[in-house]
Amino acid sequence: MTYAITQTCCNDATCVAVCPVNCIHPTPEERAFGSTEMLHIDPKTCISCGACADACPVDAIFPVDSLSVAQKEYAEINAAYYEGDAPDTAPEPAPDGPNFHAWGEPSFPRVLPADFAPPKVAVVGTGPAGMYAVQDLLLHTAAEVTLIDRLPVAGGLVRYGVAPDHPATKKVGETFARFHDHPRVRMHLGLEVGTDVTPQEIAAHHDAVIYAVGASAGRRLSIPGEDLPGSVSASAFVAWYNAHPDAVPDGIDLSAERVIVVGNGNVALDVARILLADPDTLARTDIADHALRALRDSKVREVVLLARRGPEDAAYTRSELIALKHLPGVELVVDDHDPRIAPAVDTAGAKEKAAVLRGVTRARPDWERPPEPGRRIVLRFHCEPVEVLGAEQVGAVRVAAGTGERTIPAGLLLRAIGYRGVPVAGLPFDESAGTVPNEAGRVAGQPGTYVVGWIKRGPTGGIGANRACAAETVSTLLADAVAGALPAPPHTPRDFHRLARRRNRQVVDARGLAAIERAEVTRGRGAGRPRVKLATVAELVSTARSGRAGLLRRAGR
Image (tube, rainbow, N blue to C red):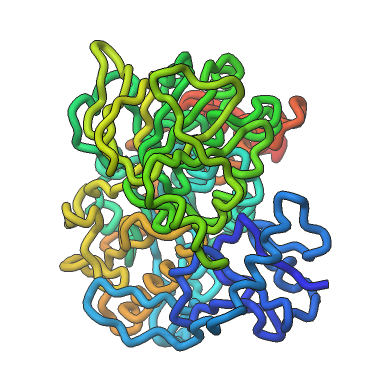
């Protein structure tokens, strides 16, 4: 009984490290690592020991015999990777240029205690990139870490970016949570850099500062009508259904029968799926309460995804498309308006993502009529928006395709064409790339300052890609420490703690975060849900303070 890697693969390669027979590829040393959508288990080599399943942080690995109907395709996907042309197992070439990142298995320079004093490091951002860096610092050095986040709760992308119906993916947060109350970690949640404290003040209290602030802005279409009410970035929509404190609870109008999503990456598929999923199913997740109420009352019956290129070049991963094919009560349709679409699907090889669309209904919808009965998602390739139409709000989108222009009526437009980093106070910024200029994580011209994650490399790669990315940055930091290149701060992290408390009396620490966790899980337990999220800064801070006070009373302090 062999194992197979399934939809929620995070690509962090933990499974590769524990496999006793080297049956999981591509490995971090191989050329294809980082460019494949997921890792694959060779069924001819697997000895069914289960070590990979035990190590997987996102529950993506299962025995083939136990796969559900919706997961059966993954047995074939894993096997197909090893058929035909052999996988490219050549090592990565030498780096070529300052922006080249050859991710490899996390490794660190061999250092001795005498090489340098344990560094005192501030990490700004508590999402996956920041927490992989924290993990490496705590496990491989005697570093002291100060964790800073502008929100009064930790988690970043894991809490506010992963779709609520992907609970296995969220499990990686449990791996990170064990470091929140580590004895060498001090936490300052709800502390905003640039408002409460300056980058210079953080640097003045630490040997090094790592910025892991992600890429929070949605890219724009730059077409007429884009700013009409009812035109919303996918990042704002994701924040809305994930109970992000910045989201307005009643900010999404679901009164239209048709929604257009521009883009066909995984985020586009996420928002389409959430819009049409059964609310009773979503009610068993940690979706925001206000989003669940809105989806129960929603009039949306059809979601149209516009993709500029063809199915052979789609940005989504095969795993997310497979999940869409098996969404209960929702029909997946390919708009067959362009003569290039059918050949691209019908001639696709087994390893190509276009092949997943074989057997999917093809049709040419009459866009002048309301959506047909039932719920459906329409994939419209070779098509891009050129204008958003409407007097006071979105009423339709004019699109251009190889067959000419036409108008598609819709009451909501979601822009899912990617994310972009925003300038970080006190750091240089590359406007064209949306990143902080760096070399292997070291910020140009600022000794002791580092970046990791999307603000370092751009918005590419999922959660697991941050593991190798963080390892590179931490390795650079340690090399600088050994070389004596880290500036000596005039103040201590303890001084910074006092400064932070003076600047913001509502800062949440590890005890407060634990109180938030208990409160949300308790609320969820009564409703048959993993948790019910607190959705506002006031709720989060109040819960943290009351819970922390209760702990101190019980401890007699």
